Image 1 (cartoon, rainbow, N blue to C red):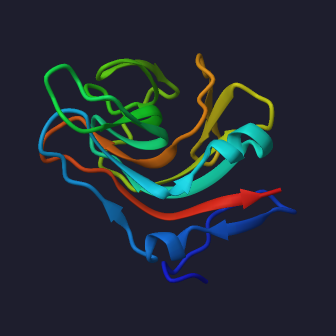
Image 2 (image 1 turned 180 degrees about the horizontal axis):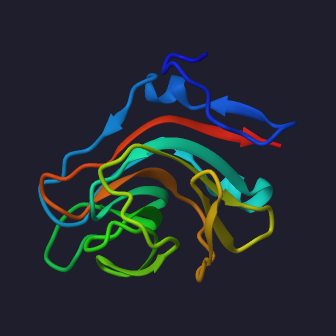
Image 3 (image 1 turned 120 degrees about the vertical axis):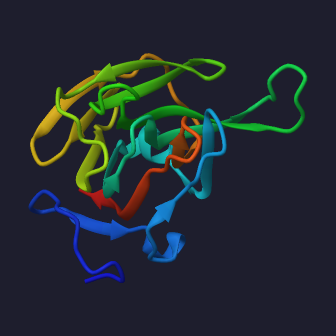
Length: 184
């Protein structure tokens, strides 16, 4: 057992590698002070995993509506008139703003995303175990909560980036714990 007190579910014959040391074995929470608040963890780059090995991660999450786990985030040039870099969610999974349905988001512009729901039940405010899989060489993201919730085609080749959290509602926060990578 790790510091978080439980093991993530994983396929038989696979080994789980914990990100606990990088995240300090803690639950991770961000508190948004406005729209499109993104926190990226530069200790957790994912481009190598997607490009060569695919990615297979699992974590426990409690999503408020309109909050997401950032599977692939990037720093972009600032919006017109602003200074400094802006963290953005390239690909994320979380609960939709109005329905609470588990949804995959893909960046299409400055604070604009395509949103594809993968279930038809409100999962907001409830702790759930998630698994996100992109098979090596694939351009599809599979989202699991026990059984497969859905598969979404990634429309852009996401290269370079980091994992993190996003909230689009002031005062709302996703809570993530027990983040693990599954090695096949």
